[in-house]
Image 1 (spheres, rainbow, N blue to C red):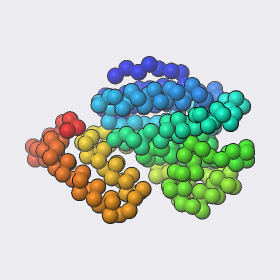
Image 2 (spheres, helix red, strand yellow; image 1 turned 45 degrees about the vertical axis):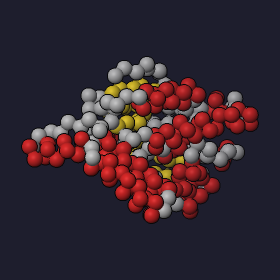
Image 3 (cartoon, helix red, strand yellow; image 1 turned 90 degrees about the vertical axis):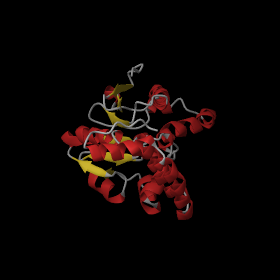
Image 4 (cartoon, rainbow, N blue to C red; image 1 turned 60 degrees about the vertical axis):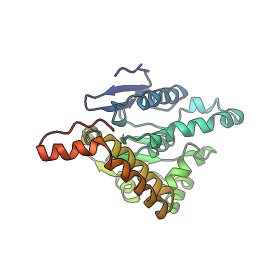
Length: 263
């Protein structure tokens, strides 16, 4: 699959069906600007339209994931601009949760402000030991507005979210792991291999089951246990009627690699 490559985000699709997205403004320490956001949306549209992509790895070239929004861009924002654009900005970062495929984030160096909000929309976050997280918006006269207050609070809890957002507290790798901001911490030199390995492992699983499982987890997180159990009942009938289930069982019995088709 071919992508139109924009310099702000490099894209590669592996033979195993993993789309690797690399933030690529290394001279600006991957500061997020309007061009990067528009490019990210276009890439997401292409991923949604391509059945052969089974997982996404979001990472960054250079020493840092991102230092957050480009301050040169922020200087051009006004009240009217924000009112017209904020819903779109939120949708770009939240789009990963709408996809039926897993999205893994690999984070190193600085992950500041908008960078934290970017990875909050991913399914699994893996951090290098040298990572530094911080939400400085309040100190700049702002409040996180691309999912920061909403998703971070649900991910790490009320008190910790207030500590990070209201206190602009810097959090290092092990502390981030302890409060649930990331799911794994690895050595810096192992980060990319570990994240890609996990993405490839999930990409190899039956896509229909992967999509149902992701939806079920998200629904359970947002709703009552009763609603989540009803969803499990509904999705179970779909999975048991799928060709992928029959293929998984046959491949296991015949001791061969399964060939899943997503149906």
